Length: 401
Ligand code: ADP
Image (tube, rainbow, N blue to C red):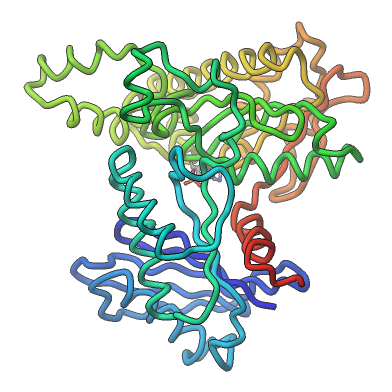
């Protein structure tokens, strides 16, 4: 059984085709520059890659290009569209409406339009991907999986902001949390390694990539997370400031002669590691600059580690202790000195880890970093959001029956 996974952004669509019998990716790629000057598709299958420049004026045309490449290119991996049993779509914001993955219907699309108010950029792109794909594959079941869904179990005291209750009721202003698909995947993998039921472990899941979030998980559920109403809240990230006193927005708007939304844009796109270092938001480029003695690059990494440490500490307290701390995503999986700094500051709660092992982890493997006498297990686990979307798609579309 083959499942196609679609992750639609405003001018790009990433895709992966899974063979579910062995849960392996048989083709993947992305359409870039959709609706812009020179759109192209990158496509990888069977160890080879092609790039084709094609007209893609909108998401529908881009999805036609994806299917045509899967079927007709020199790297074709299917003989007929019927081989694709279902499509799974990633959606960033399910808002107050969805707490689990659902089959896409006209009603679901109409409902998701209501989330444009709280998440304009993501909603627009994600809906365009769903609408386009339903046009191109009208007879194939399509499922939507939300980044926010896993966090819908947070208790009120965790997801409410200390503002007027009516603003929550009228405008849905609350903490939603993101990366839920990744945190849920990490929960499942951690339970597997520990040989426990996911409901019986408490973990702090640290998804640290371009965007980062720290989540407290107990009883199989997210009970708190560092991201908020949008993915801007929480730890400092590649280009996002993370937690900041909201007064700074009005103050900087005044000083820089900008609107509040322009300052929010600046906090999202020009701040964080990029803003502090002035070098890059990419950790590999930051590492190079640190090697060359760049003090601001070093400060950016120090700040990132410090803020992650604070949030991990908060989540350990919220959980009243944990069984495991897990690092995942591009930076969490690969940046050993970040893990080292965070773990060093947790020795007071009995975290002990193998420094040598932490510094020499092979790429892309599941590893235990803690020593046997550590009070809390520490793991490095590569995340796989697409696989979880594919599994949900099979389940929601009832393809197992
Ligand atoms: P996204 O949030 O876009 O999914 P990723 O999880 O892919 O992000 O993480 C991207 C980040 O991971 C970038 O900052 C990148 O520099 C960093 N990264 C990737 N590989 C390495 C590596 N080997 N060492 C350090 N950082 C890495």
